[in-house]
Image (cartoon, rainbow, N blue to C red; front, top):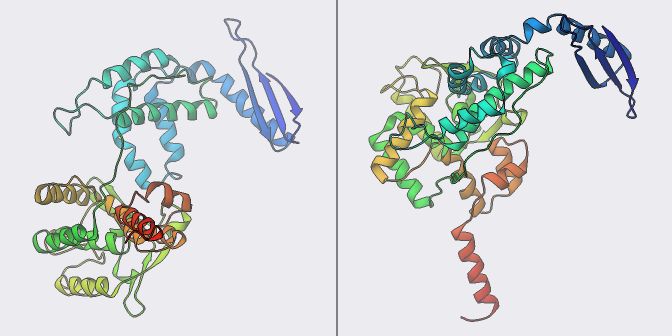
Length: 372
């Protein structure tokens, strides 16, 4: 092996490495830029040399082997929710590519797979095809594994360049309801489907995320000062809840104010469930432990059946922000309550067109023109 260290204009270093010729006369090369010191550059050269020495074996790695290496490297760095979310994508991708050598996965055969998926029926919704967003997630997962392999010098390159997708007519629109509708829904859930009442109420009146709500314990409620502390997250492992102290971001760890109504409902809930051996505030005597998937599906199915409204549990966060927006709560306060790291997210993603605000606007114009 030979290598050359060069100093870049920004003061950092670039390393160029050449392998010795293999039995076929092929020489492998690798370049890494923006290293902080010559020592870091030399260490990188040794790492690349080791990869070169194993090159023939490594280049024969199958997708499943590379995925296992990735999982081992990332198991302590990714949050449980992220790992759990990838399970479906992992299963589908590994069924297709698991035994294929990574170096043989390219734009051509990936495009063929995408074309096949676009004709595949959604297993959860008969009569519907897989969503484009789902197909893109499958491809994204494969790219994640291959790109990681390249970054760790297990692969020379990722041969997937560009994939063509059919025109995407899917446009996500959260269901935004007026206050009277939301009130009616909460009353119906409390009366006829109490299993999910407390998480729905907490979401709409305080606005933690779904997995934050299910992680709230009795010690996180301060009735004396009217406060709720968001300290933990939960994830689902084979139908069982597991708690995790790591939240989505630093701003997710926050303190929320409790309305007097929510305090009253929580106290009544605790009294009703006083004989239930649990510390989680959302658990109840009717079902016991509530999992994220149970809450998601049961909420959607109940609202669809009772009100003929297609609404997700996550839409309650959109409605919380919209109600605050329409009633004059400033952006900074809304963003902090929602646990967003950037106010732009609150404004761009969660703030929607408001009929109430537009009515106020047109009446303002009428008054300005003195037409009354």
